[in-house]
Length: 411
Ligand code: ADP
Ligand code: ASP
Ligand code: MG
Image (cartoon, rainbow, N blue to C red; front, side, top):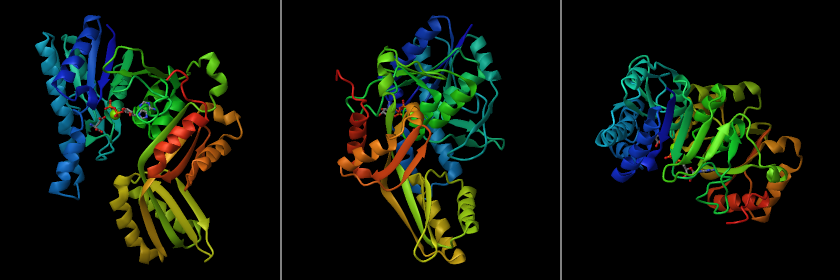
């Protein structure tokens, strides 16, 4: 019998009515003859609510206890979904990440899954249970609960699908699939029928919230196709897979397949560091030792014969970066530093860029016409990103969507 993994995000299980709807969907899949593993997120905004509560109690947000706390969000929804299935007369059992055998590397709040011991899940499936697994969490070798970073239930689902050799991995969410831009901002965005892992990875990494980047990495690594679709409608969504089929009439437009934006940008600039590679390396080694994930980096020699270094991270890292640089100021003789948390990043993504010159110029021109200043720029073979003021991000996304011919005709 084939195994199907279905993942339901927070908005899909936001209240009792939603949970009942998810239960019916899961039950239908089981009735169709599949063994079903449902992976669920915490209800609605409950992860944010738990973080806000913790902040009132201890603003330092101690890491181990934060993971312990946040994991309870998913634990609520698995129990409720299992109850809803029992109410429908189905056999069902809920499992936390640890009970499901999801083993993690011990890094609080951004753990990676090292492996999954599927024995318990298989045993439950073989006794005819629908298995409901808490997303976003696992257990490390020392027995501590770890969470996988925001949006981590996507990664739980894909990793489980791989480990269980599932036939299908469906990601149910509050939009109908992956769109050419966030459909909440761009009304003329259209649903992409198929997208390659590489393009999806860039879209996700550049801020398209719909899939956690790690989940796409795992899917790509093991060639697990994903179906991203609506939890509220039955329409076909977006298939994420190795080679995406491109509708013929779109071919000329496909320089850019999507626009992504990210408000979680923190830019730090260090002024007047010694102009040598040793100091540069030392700063970044120390940032790495704090597990601070870097995105963009730029350095330039300045008029004082020293170097200015800028880099971007997530906003959550503000305190860590500040503390580290304060400690380094004297030791390394830095001129000073500045941290800005009012910026955003807007990116254009598309495999067609590799072979077509002038795409970056097009992007800069479009932003210029909108009077939007560009702060930092970064490129890869299939994406170009610009850091801009956060207040202009919607204007930028809309203008780039139109400028790169992505607006749907019929909307
Ligand atoms: P879930 O709770 O189901 O995990 P998320 O809120 O994490 O859902 O992700 C879905 C959201 O991602 C959508 O509501 C949408 O606003 C946002 N999003 C951003 N970019 C895109 C895109 N290109 N395509 C689809 N959704 C996007
Ligand atoms: N509940 C977690 C979050 O809000 C994980 C997830 O939803 O995927 O980030
Ligand atoms: Mg999500």
